[in-house]
Length: 166
Image (cartoon, rainbow, N blue to C red; front, top):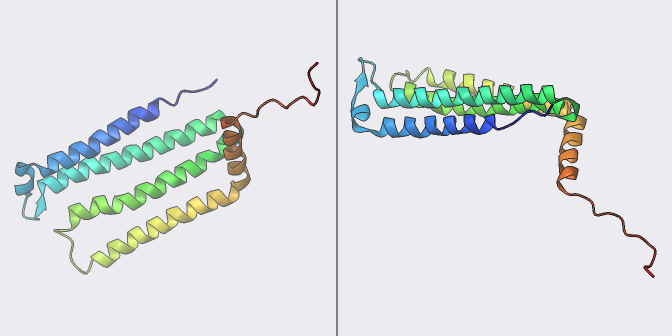
């Protein structure tokens, strides 16, 4: 049974709305000028962190669901499931640094910045190595799946008959 992929559009719309709404709300004057407690964290930064963090969580959930649906489809596409999840994880981990950085900059001690940087460097490298490993171990299946999609995209014309018409 062929499953529908329309649900991806729903995820993308919600992610886009969260990104835009978070940025718009963070830019409003009441959020810009308000700080939370004595920490110096702005309400706008918190709103943007919640919205963009939620968008990243939805992006990863979408990648997880894509991987599951590819796995259930079977055939050569089941090998693409691990690649899709590893790629989405790499994008989310790399983007999470920027999302978190905007929130904690006012309260982060200068001696902790290198530690946070290294945590994300290790996370990004781990995700990238996972993606490379998956691409390496499933390379034949990935090439076959991409080749199958490319072959289905361009249909071969029927062979010409060598006979001459009377």
